[in-house]
Length: 398
Length: 68
Image (cartoon, rainbow over all chains, first blue to last red; front, side):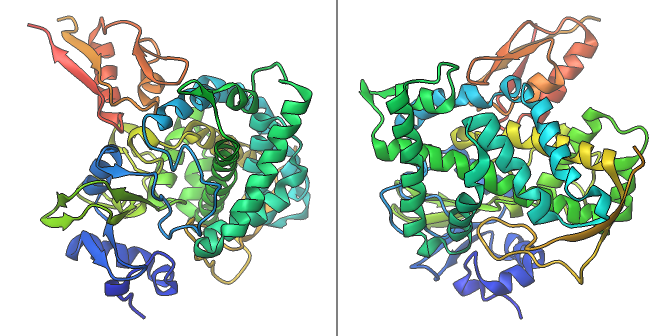
């Protein structure tokens, strides 16, 4: 079944079935496309267009929605994702210092420990369901314990809210409200007990001021929810996607496990995995004025969906764009997976780091990784990754 | 011949930090993770690193100004 482009929408099951050919067709035939679905919106699929729009934050604003399929209305809004300057600037100044490469590097021993603890639960069994035994837990534990500084006992309830937001964004109002209330409890607890004193994220948010005023409760909730979603969701999907490739592409598995593998080469390979398949493939903006793109008039108020995942396969930007080239030099790999411009993924360094460390630990402990199920279905959601991934493998001798 | 390029970083820097990964002797990061220049390239190989950093920058925020 081919995708009905006239009514294109990101959660169309037909798109999920015929994903890359459909996006290639759009890049070639209608790179600036008007869909009639969801009250009408634009879809940009070429690298150059997504890059330009992502950087033009005056013309294409985030405050009126950033999900490719709009979230149901809630007073809890993910910020800084859904904030515009100057408020956005303030939030990034508060949060940015917690996510620099230097700060993230300090978490490396903890990342390795978490990866090993998860591997301990299944390595000797010779099989696992990778999504639920590893992928989902690794970024969650690192984020909860390493960044937020709280126990990860709430991971499953937070996962349920995140799943609702990703799979049924148009029906997620209650999940936003409940997720917000959970974040509020963290803030209330901190207010009651005073700052923790090691200058963590929650203390920083509570101490932050915008135009002289403290952040509102809804802003605090929105910021914690935004960080938590970012910390849990996309990295989990990316890890699953990568292991799927490892299990089904022998040349990928042997390249990554070759004796000469270094930290640097692994980091380069991770960037290429992220280019090749983007776990958050699209994001939206709203035009703040009439503007032309590729001969089309985008009117003030129009929603524009930027298909970063498609731009990452644009042959005008990348040589061998549809191939997974694990040693693709970083200077030829300006992918859009983390976005571009002021909304560049705040957690990009955390994600790059934890994916690399996870792969290093996986290959240190197990080998001969193969798929142990008939085919792999990607879940049809605004983030993209395998629904389940049953793997079999051999434990390496210690 | 010695290096003849001068690096400049534009406002467009958004903290991808690829320059810092490629040439940590020449680029550092501020508190918020945005690139700052530590010093200018002094050798041909450092100039080469700067050129790679400029190409790798997702924001295309690094300019190399040729000296006269």
